[in-house]
Length: 171
Image 1 (cartoon, rainbow, N blue to C red):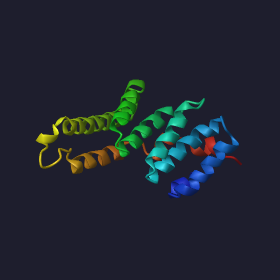
Image 2 (image 1 turned 60 degrees about the vertical axis):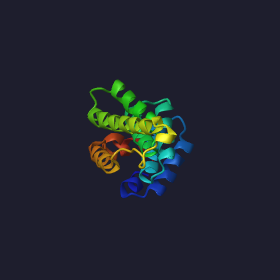
Image 3 (image 1 turned 135 degrees about the vertical axis):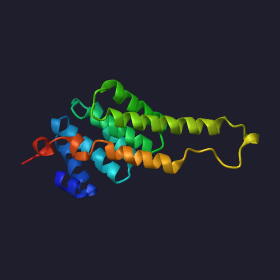
Image 4 (image 1 turned 45 degrees about the vertical axis):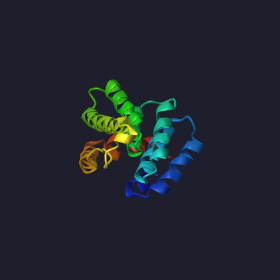
C-alpha cells in the first residue's frame, strides 16, 4: 500500500489500506490505514471521503495520527467549501497543538476559512432588492494562490504520516 501511495497509485493503495482495516480492525495498523485512506481520497479529489477517513482516524482507539488527521480534515472541509467546519478544525488544531511545526499553516488556513465565511455572510446580508450587479466574492485568484502557498507549507504526506514501513508491514 505504501509503495502504491508513494507512486501516486491512490486507488490501489486504497484497496490495500481498506484490506488492512478489514483484517486488523481496532489494531495499531488501522490508525495508519485510516489516515492513508484519507490521504488517498484527498489526492483523488474525493474530499468528503477523505474527511470521513480522517474522522475515523481520530475516533479509533489510537491517537498518534490525530493531530495530522485533524489538520488534513480541515483541508478536506475547506476543499468542500465547508468553511465553518474547516475553521473549527484549524482552531481545534491550534488549541490542541499550539507549538506544532504546522501551527502557522493551520493559522493561515483558518484565516482563509474565516475570510470565506465573512465574504459569504456579506452576500447573504444584502437584501434581495439591493443586490449589486455582481456578486460579492473574495478574490478567488488571490485566495487560491495563498492556499496553494500554504498547502506547500503544510505537512507533506511523508512528514505527517511517519514511518509507514515499521507500522504497516504485514510480512
